[in-house]
Image (cartoon, rainbow, N blue to C red; front, side):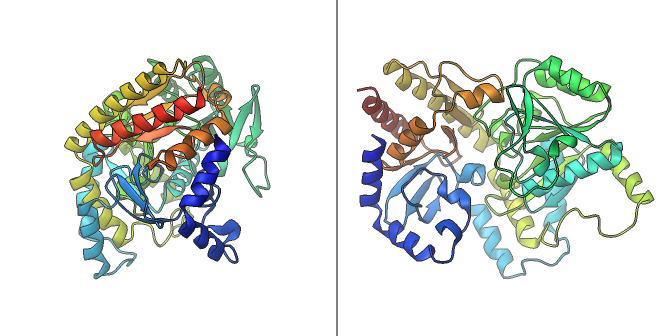
Amino acid sequence: MLEAERTRFAQANPASAALEHRCAPHWHRGVPFHWMLDWGTPFPLFADRAQGAQLWDVDGHRYDDFCLGDTGSMFGHSPPPVARAIARQADRGLAYMLATEDAPAIADELAARFGLPFWQVTSTASEANRAVIRWCRGITGRDKILIFNGCYHGAVDDAFVDLRDGVPELRGSLIGQVYDMREHTRVIEFNDLAALEAALAPGDVAAILTEPALTNVGMVLPDPGYLEAMRELATRHGTLLVFDETHTISSGYGGHSMPFGPQPDLFVLGKPVGGGVPCAVHGFTAEVAARMDRLREIGEKGHSGIGTTLSANALALAAMRACLTEVMTRDAYDHMLALAGRLAEKLRAVIAAHGLPWPVVHVGARAEFICADKAPHNGSEARAAMHGPLEAAIHLFLINRGVLIAPFHNMMLVSPATTDAQVARLAEMLDQCLGVLTE
């Protein structure tokens, strides 16, 4: 099946093939960035345009998009309020290293929505996570951070540590790092309360850095009460709790922590907050802000090594204000959450009709089917459930029939622009795909 789908793709996409040929001499591996090779296609697919929950490639094919830029365009491609704000700001300057009149509106919205009073802007979630780790180490005087097996927090070296058969190992994809991250990073399995308590007991962990539900090793949901226990243990041991909600912002209005709890000490939100424009924010409690101020008072004034001159640029601020106030609304979430629930039900029905035991994991506007007998409980189980050739065949089958899901695992997102018809078509194409696979 995979070979047949590769042939079909190659025949249907001559314009993408020609662009790959033109890119090959000077773009390393033929693309501007290596993520673009991760779709499992014989050669890169080149996009022409996208709007709402649809995308068109350079060969004129239209796709129902359930990847949405791997959450970067979670609220739809080019939402009209964001597009208008970008166009308006483009004629007024893009980067001043000064705040604009958008700043107070953004701060008020962030504080009200996420329950944390103080905020800063960076250019990416990776940069925000690095800043948060630095602050946590600085204000606690501790060097360790605690992460969970299978986590991903962007291009943050400290988080590139895995557990393999219970033994911490440096992630094989960490290139060129010259010291052992395990000296300063402790890694345990998600949902293991005893391991969490043991990891915090020495009193040397500055911060727990986690998603409230893991999404980057496949979807791993927290056990009932696990996050609340994490909150209590962090407080007891003087450790700061950081939720990276760059992906779990899809869980509900206010992300995962506001509708489901508990509240962290620090909060990171990346790519969706600007409607696809590169930007990110991190928020923190009044207590953390006071500790930051005390640390700055005793240190050297001036450049902290945190942030860049493009952080909080005028274009990003304009996009964030429009996205937060006009796009990421309660009505938008009401649509997304209800439709994602219907999507999960349709996926379960299709999979059951083919006699497969695959579970569907679903929270908020995000769903994923797992090519295994049960839903994973931690990162090790999620890795064990991965089936590379099978998932590649499914993804390419869907691409060839005008449906995009995330190239990583089998994850799907529903946006405010996604329709019931698109959900029905995704279910229909998966039904056809499983029919071929189970013949």
